Image (tube, rainbow, N blue to C red):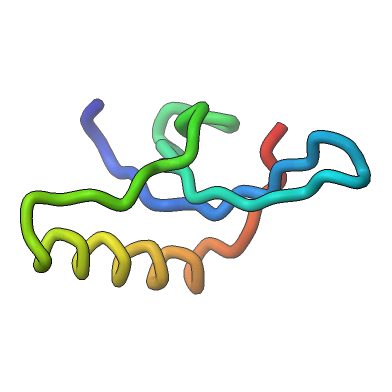
Length: 70
């Protein structure tokens, strides 16, 4: 997929007793609700890749907050 994207923390509520959070990729240029169905996995080919991903997730969490997964 091309275009701007960011990591987005999503609140999942299976029922009122089961709430959990996951980090998804969000694609705002594709419209509302344009995020990955499954949360992302932290992975990479090097320690630097992992550091970049974790730092970017934290930065995007501060910038974009938490959304409800619907």
